[in-house]
Image 1 (cartoon, rainbow, N blue to C red):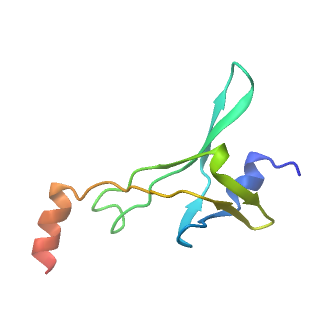
Image 2 (image 1 turned 90 degrees about the horizontal axis):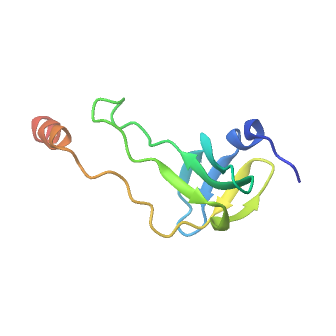
Length: 97
């Protein structure tokens, strides 16, 4: 099966370890020396409409992809690490709680 970047961007990425919806592919990292795709990148989600910043980007290595289907891409990412709570987030949390 052949896919363009446009096709990949319309497929939802799901982590098979916990069923979490990671998002949609936003970008790729391409190796120009051997003409291969190295990783897929999902940009970090905004927290509270961007007021609290955003999470880190998720980078998925090609070896972590298990299946590319019609509507989804199944990946196995054991540890998806998001950005730590910032000082701004902690201050707003104290204010609203």
